[in-house]
Image (tube, rainbow, N blue to C red; front, side):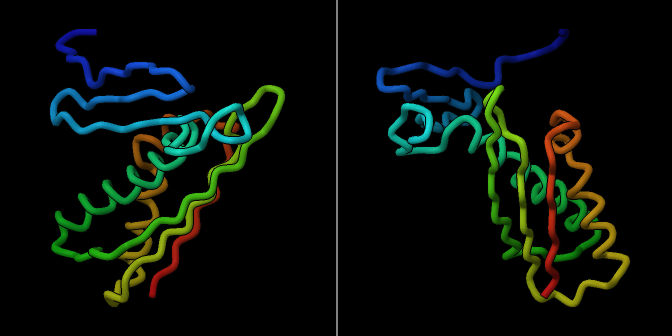
Length: 139
């Protein structure tokens, strides 16, 4: 790997908790193990973050595409549901319902937004066996 910089630093503390620091900004994320896996569930679990990352990536690249076209998507909301599987324990499905604000999107804009979201870097990086059930609702 050439020209790489460290993105984050993650420190484990007791009680199945971690603190991740984004080195460029100093922002912090706390994780806890989920209650169904020996944890307290007082923060995002690592698999919650993975699932949520798909939604944030989708909205981010859709926002980039909208800004380039002078289209507003302010107020878009993504609801994320993570479904776990056992043996091996893993995320089996991620369901995301994206509700777009009432902005009068054309059919062409809707198609562009859906394609852009579904092909975001996180979506393309996840294992192909992981089911990505994505729904778009245009108000």
